[in-house]
Length: 429
Image (cartoon, rainbow, N blue to C red; front, top):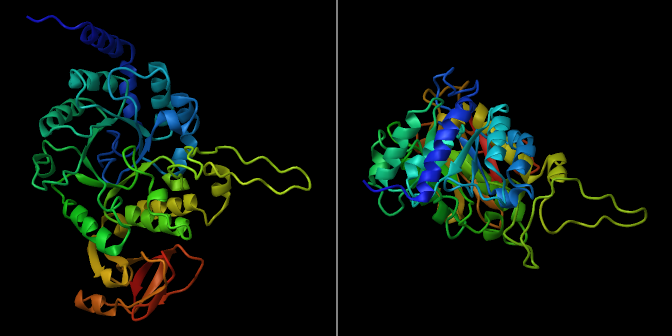
């Protein structure tokens, strides 16, 4: 019998200690909210995961994340997903195992789960996963894992209480992939970057990607988890910016993430407009404290090296509060989060539009129409023919949420949308 390497012996020892010393931590993955074991509804069905790089999110690493959990709570996140803990060790630059245990405990008290990403090339992947599960981690994101690895990890997570989950990735080259079609072996969630990372932010590019993502959203398949940002992508706020409509573009992208049937994976700071870098080439940071007050008789000095949370929090028109409005709508409106999705084709006008249709349409439960102008010019659009072809009744849209400062309804046969404007409305007659 081949003896264990020193690293694997240490890992096995750590796992044994963890089982004894941290058995209580298993309960931290299942506090009293949906999916806790006290409620049969899966917590991940309409999940919002908030992905964090501990090295960049806060100068204090894991301890800094613990201090910002109340902010994460304002986004209604179901779980945070931690980068940088891909194996059985925690980089000392971000903290210790005790810091992770405290983070899990603090998050649990706020009804937030903690997931971590795993490296599928890690030695003895299942032992590494078991180690973190005993600490109360609620699941894993395993980018690049094989279907066989995911199947083994799913069996392991299922052996722990509290609806522990796996997040896999959409196979963009082969939609018949085993992990996407066999629910018994598949992860619960599949990260899908296609609609949010299209090479060009145009209706002709985004619409087919959204249709492909929707095709995966079936009862017997994993839930699609849309994303536009992540550690391997340039920041969307920089990627799609035109220098004139940057905030409006970011608001339009947010609507694509949250007004569809899918779950969402946010990368920290995208809700604030965190850019890849400043014009000077330095990496932007998140400012958690209000800017210093200017000296008497002097003008305030603007912060150009990153967004300021208190300033955005206090501005009802900020990108942060637009994200919060969309998230709240997705949480509270069953037609938005569960209704049938019908995507319309208005590529010729560079408009992305879709209908969210309830199971039973009535005047009290009307369809909801989402319209996004993806151009830098105003667009006048008619949806009258689309509605008639779908045998739906309606002559105007009553506003539910809109990204501009306007008010009032829009008529189907002639609605004018400002550049990069989002209009979400109930279809009424």
